Length: 184
Image (cartoon, rainbow, N blue to C red; front, side, top):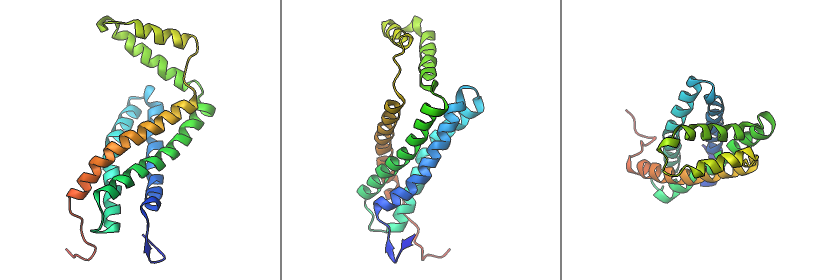
């Protein structure tokens, strides 16, 4: 992982690893899309979501091994944030294409499914007026645009990615790394 004898910088490593994490997010998104029709796809999407910390931890450990003992918590945390940023860019491009060109009614269908789910909990709600307002808005066609949904997902990925990166960076710093020169 050396380029012209020099080590890769944090941004370059995050860009390259962000491609892999972005492709992982794209595959997860494909399973999420089909999760409404298939229990198997729903299970795979949930399993992939639960494995995101393992993937991030693995990429952080690889970066720490690349940098060596001079790696700090703040470097790993920043690498994780950048990792989520670049992965979100790839994922958001695929999502935008899907929302606009492949299935333009997907966002509306998701909101309708959420309203149906909330409708089952109506007897337990203290004030169901909010549900009525959401239903009225959907009937009038007030659905977020694909671009607003994509931008919101980028921000959500960055926020939760930074929290997850802090935890994984702490874990990656806590556990010792194996030296390349040690033999077993």
